Image 1: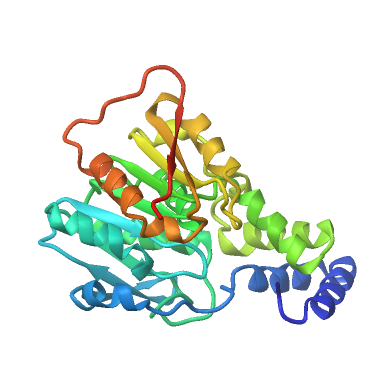
Image 2: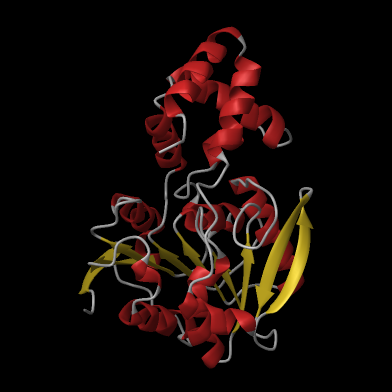
Length: 300
C-alpha cells in the first residue's frame, strides 16, 4: 500500500485530465520507487563479506556489483523488486562450491546502491554491462521482477546457456495492475504513464511498452528453462510462471512448490539443490512434447 494513497489518487486522476504530461511523469516516478530498502539478513552476511565489490555507472546512476570465484563459468544472479543481491546467496554459495563464478548487483535504489528508484530499462542496461565485462553467462538465476527484467535483456543481445526463474513475473501488465490497485488511479493515468515511458525513458525504442512482457518472442532465448513457483505465493500468482512455461514450450519445466511463499523459496534446500543440478548439468536434456510441470512439497 502506498502512503497517502487517497491524496495521491485524487491528484493523479485530476491532473491526468488536464495535464497528461505531468501526470505521466508523476505516476512513473511513483511506479519505479521500491517500497522500502531491504537489509542484509544474518544468514547472508558471511558469503556477502567474501564478494569482490565493484561499482558501475549505468544511465547516470551508481550500481554496486558483487563477484565471487575466479571468473570462469560466470552465472548472473538478478534480484527482485524491493530486494537485493544478497537474497540469492544460497545459490551463489552452492554454485561457487561447484566451481562457478557468481555475479550479482544491487539495482539503483536497492541494497547498497544509491538512489531512490529503478526500472526495467535500467536493469537491462546493468545486465548488458555485466555481460560485456564477464562474457556469455553459463546461467542466469532470477527472482520475481528479476525474471521479467532478465528475459527482457536476454531478448536483446545478452546470452546464457541456461535460465532459472523463481517466483517470476511474466507479464508487465501484472505490475501495472498492482500499481493501479494500490493507488486506485484511473486507466487514464496509466495511459499517461505509458506515454511518458515511450517518450522519455526509451525514446529510441518505439513501442517499448508492448515489448516488456517476458513471454514475448521466447525463441530469442535458445536455452533450457527451469521455473520454480510456490502455489501459495501471495505476491506473484503461479499463473505467471505457467505463462512462461507455455511460452518456452519443450525447453521449459515448471516445478510448483508448497509452503514456501514468495521469499522462502530462495533458501529452501530442496529448491536450491534441484536448481543447481539443472544449472550445472553437463548436457541439458530437453523434455519431450509440451512444457511440463512438476510438484514438490516444502521441507519442514
